[in-house]
Length: 372
Image (cartoon, rainbow, N blue to C red; front, side, top):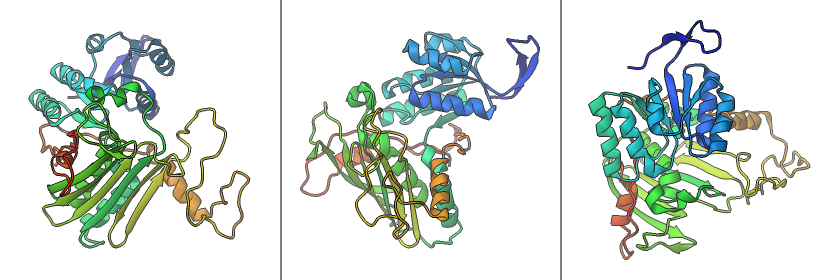
């Protein structure tokens, strides 16, 4: 098991108390953000780094000068690590995670864990056999608003949930070419964004999925069985054995009036929305403020700031600050592989069970893994 210990400080030669020794396989955008957060929390030692891009790994090494830089996964596995953090193209997750688990390391992997149910089951089986911790980056379940909704639901304070609407729309698409190769990514916006919605719907419903229907679109047209194209817009309906239902929608490059729009609406009393208006732009050098969404302007009667945004009332400022900082306060998720594992195949089911009169869509499973 991973534990705290005392090791020799490379600089002083003395002993220092550290957390688990972690290796990072892939230190691009998400990998570097995760590395910086863990380093700032001082709960673990960043011991090893590997990335195929020399410039990227050099930048990461500046943040963690005590870490050893390797050239491959095999070199990482020789660094006396306790755990491995994986943020590489999806097609590599299974091979890399299984190798680390078989070497006795705990694994935290960027979502999706695998491109298909079979790949995911192989990884979970390897974690069970090795009796190692296996975590997946299903980060939205730790947003404070989501946790509050779940606590209210579990306490019976909002009654029985019978319908949910969940959406995740990005005004941008992935910036790496491999995302658009079905063999490397395993899918389009559903496996990239919709996986979070399915994870939240499963947690809120608290019941297995009984039936799924869905539609996939590419470039504004229904996506048929072309295996070389990926969906950039998708809708799905999940019906649960409890009788509850969830409507899901996700997209890349949707002109939503802002960079990212994410939300949960549950029939009755609960509405949760959080957006990320400053993380991305269509062009890094674009100085223009993001376009305002259509509809009633916020802060009516309060005037507008020079950039076009009305001034925020104190309660709106507090809400926006809470949304902006939700990732900073995320607790560490620990998933134990030998506990109950749920495999959600909503994308596959959406392809196999289209609404009546619709052609079968491209099959592309995605995964939700969580503790019982």
